[in-house]
Image (cartoon, rainbow, N blue to C red; front, side):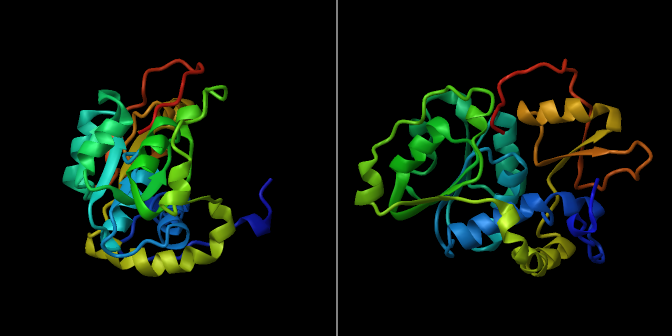
Length: 260
């Protein structure tokens, strides 16, 4: 049962597809925007590393960070194809496939000069690598822990805790539900860029509500790019900037989540 207090009317903006309210204008985009502007207090020219950069929050973070004046923008993804797309279409400068070796080595090659901010959707080895790569006064924005969702007994990441003191590193997590007051600010920032085309929608669309479980499992296994959206078969076909996807052929069984 949904109460009136749980319902929020959506404004309509010319030229903005409704699916944007599920991605860059919704909780996904708000998470990215709050992470950058409120938690990291991101400054123009700073270098940023985003784990699971091909996911919904990762793509939104990349696009918003570029508009906020990011310096070098680095990400991690689950395949070479995703890495290539993030560089060509989203605006990342370098993206590594985390399967290709130790995260510290891969991040060191992608960001040889270090980073100022780490937006963490994964935790684990990539978090440890980022601690080592952060410069003085670096910030870590903790959003998710994909690497541990189905492995709660996995050992915590190992890093040099002295780095937090010696480099004055700050790490902070947050719940986007505590930042609903920032929603209008997100609209003011993002809508003009959506209307002008500077922000494109990163979506993987699955047709048919009967495929909701498959779509959810596909998201956990890294088969999406951007926000996963399940659409009624009778809905209008997606715009040219929307990626349509066939539902993954998987059984509904437990499997370790895979960072995007």
